[in-house]
Structures are given as structure tokens and as C-alpha cells.
Length: 303
Image (cartoon, rainbow, N blue to C red; front, side, top):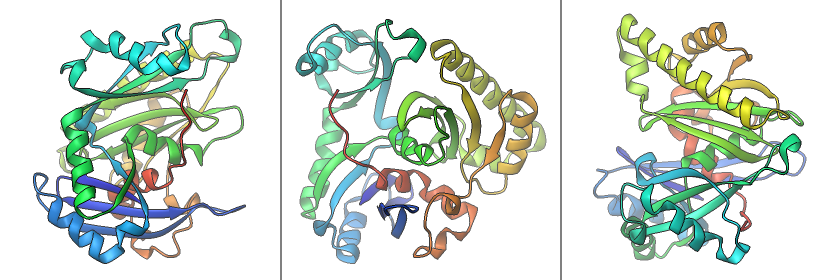
């Protein structure tokens, strides 16, 4: 079960894999709360869903962590995190001594295997991690993992992939815009853009055009970077996650200005939503998009 603490409350989702079929979203839950007082909402979720019987993951917010791309230090695997901690000491906006750190290894391009491997280093404040753990301890829930939106989006993107070709996925939420590129179920690239859903959905036409232009520029830069770094891994298409009201306009604008096909996503095309009819609308798919992605998590292996 994945749980996400958002500005308006606590979101939760439970999904299960299905052999030979679409993963099934079994249920969703939402309990309103202020962002600075999520304990009562988590307690209500515990009473409703008996969280203690699940292995839970907690999805961090976009501003709760930093992700930095670094060259992998030439050290044994068991020393990697401590070596990366030293590399990050001047890259974070808080002291590295106060950070919990994890790393993801990015696959090397097939045609450039001799190049130094790259890591995505994720850092969050120890205090935040301890606060999240304390919330779960309070309701006697088992916190199995702490996750990030980039990896949650990776889980959904993996369901869209074509063999040997990469997929770019763009989502817009109240926390901002996230672009990821995946291939073979691996996260190759991630970029955050500080444009939130409210801006795209309720701006005047002139402002909306400026936002579309900015997103297009960020995507062009991202795709150019990916093409340079991974010339043997072609980018098949850009997919836009469900959005209320503006996804078609954004799709048409991006399609006219990018070199790859652009599509919009309905989660029912890749997930079994028969038990969650509330996901029949774009707005509900948008609200639950990232926590559903986190609920699709499978255990990661250490690099």
C-alpha cells in the first residue's frame, strides 16, 4: 500500500500484479487534513483500511528531497553510499551530515559501455524521514519503504514501454510538473519543472501559451540531453499523464513542436480499474496518479 501526504490530505492506493494481465488497482482512499497535521488523517486511514496488515510505502513530496546525477565513484558496492555522500557535500541545499541518501544506477548506453556509469543520488533530511517513520509507528503500520515521485512515475512508464525503445512521460500535479524517461523498466532521466496544475488549468490564454512554451523548451532540452547520452536508445514517444481539461491542448501544442509522437494516457489502458470506478474521470486519475505509481512498486535491489 502506498501513502502520500499532500497539501489537502492523505492519499492511499493498493495495487496488485496480475500474471499475464494488467495490474489491478484494488482500492483508493483519501482523508483530508492540513499538510502540517497529517496524523489524524493517517489514523482514519488505519481504522478504514487496517494498514497494519499491509507493507506500506510512503511517497515523499517533490520538495521533500533532492535528486542529483553524479558519476559513480570507483568503489565497491558496499561503499557506494558513503562515497556518494562525500560527492554530494557541496551539491545539496542542506548539510550532507543531516541527509539520508540512496542511489539508483542508470544503465549505460549500449554503444558507450566503456563510459563511466552514472548514478542518480537521492537525498532527504534525516528529520523528515524520522517524522514519517514516527507517524507510521504511531498507527502501528509497517513502513517498508520511502519512495519518490520519479520512481512512482517510472513504474507507470514501464507499463507503456515498447521493446528496446525509451518512453518519456510527463505528469502535472499540484506539486509541479515531472518529466521522466525510462527504458527496460529503468529510470534514465528525470526533470522537475515548477509549473503546477492550477496554472495550466485556470490561466488566461496568453499565460497558458507561455506555460506551454516553457514546458516545450524544457522537454526539448531534456530530449536533446537524452539523445546525446543514449544514442543507441531511441525515444519512441512522449506520453502525457491524465490531466483535467487541458491535456488535449497541451498534447496538440507539444506535438506541433517536438520531433516525437505525443499521446495522452488513460490509466484504464494499462491498469485494471474495475474495482475503482472513481478513476473513470481524468481529474481523479490526475489526483491519484503518483500514489498509484508508488503502489505498483516492486522491491529494488541495491546497486
